[in-house]
Length: 408
Ligand SMILES: CC(C)(COP(=O)(O)OP(=O)(O)OC[C@H]1O[C@@H](n2cnc3c(N)ncnc32)[C@H](O)[C@@H]1OP(=O)(O)O)[C@@H](O)C(=O)NCCC(=O)NCCS
Image 1 (cartoon, rainbow, N blue to C red):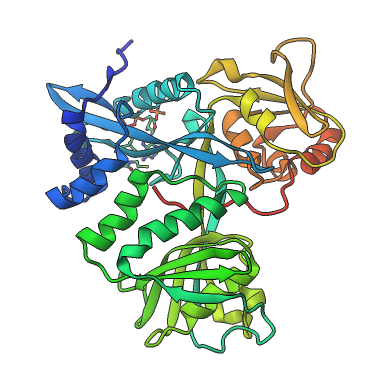
Image 2 (cartoon, rainbow, N blue to C red):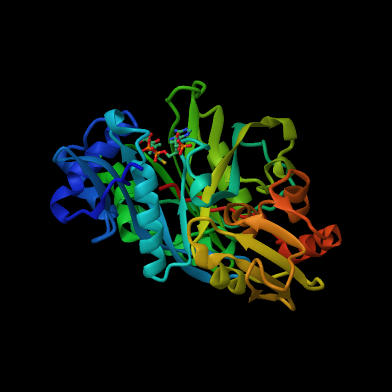
């Protein structure tokens, strides 16, 4: 049997090499000093792992601490996994597998019940117990100031931010509203630095950053810039970030974006599946849906804690068997009843599960993206007792679709 590659925690001195390796793995060049000064803030001490081969770094992965909002509103610690890359001459030798196993054990040791990532390809992470837990749609809306129905909610005032206001104002508003929806996450200082400060201060890029003020103060924002990449029509705006606490704030921010001069289309990707754009528009066909993509890949690292932390809809008890091939301590039979969940036995014990799933397939239902019945129908979940399916549907249902809106 060949030995698993040795994984080590990288010191500060190797972080830039790790970042350069990751960048090359996604076909990008190394960061210059100014960009690295900002990007480096995303690397949290002690959380970057590496595999060496022949004295050089050959593979890396990191994570930063975040928090995940679960149905019911609790926010639990989450490892935001990112910067995963293996040198092109060392792929398919088990380096990612070794990194993932070490990282999951480390996240569990840190007491973080969740890990989450955004996947470059959909076939990579399921084997490690990650499942698609939220999705988003790419929309292109034909712009003109009258595009919203006259009786659509008007919302409050929208104001543009000065460049020096962008990060402090957005950070404050995001911190207040993002966790209202299952799947929302907290953004670290390093995330703001890497994603926004770098764009504004280092790239000196032009961005439109607008804030909406509702009856209780600032409750939404939109950041956009000229969409000039491949796939963008002439005179388009690309939305980079848009969070709104409610439908009036959503309507006001879209009305603002669609009314900006010299703009014929506004395009945004990974928008919430239930964002009611078509309902707000005079002509619902002015909103073209260009695609639906996976957003949150969720790894439930501590199943008992995660199942106990979320709320459940009213339903009679369900016995759910969960199988975890990587973190075996998670496996067991869980009873979901009276709005909570607890482990009631091992998988091969006397309590027989009515429904069964892997930890990855549990993630697909956990935030409310997929219903147990569609997961049973498509073979992701097993149903030794099919009568439990409607009960599980009622228990797992959430009033809103899960969505994160933070790319990392
Ligand atoms: C994706 C990547 C990290 C995989 O690393 P790796 O060290 O080759 O992965 P492993 O050798 O541990 O592969 C584990 C298993 O996953 C499979 N796998 C790995 N990458 C895959 C991919 N892109 N598509 C399909 N299967 C893949 C392997 O075939 C292997 O399967 P097996 O056990 O049945 O043989 C690496 O190819 C890479 O750096 N790609 C470019 C950058 C990137 O996409 N990073 C991820 C950002 S989210």
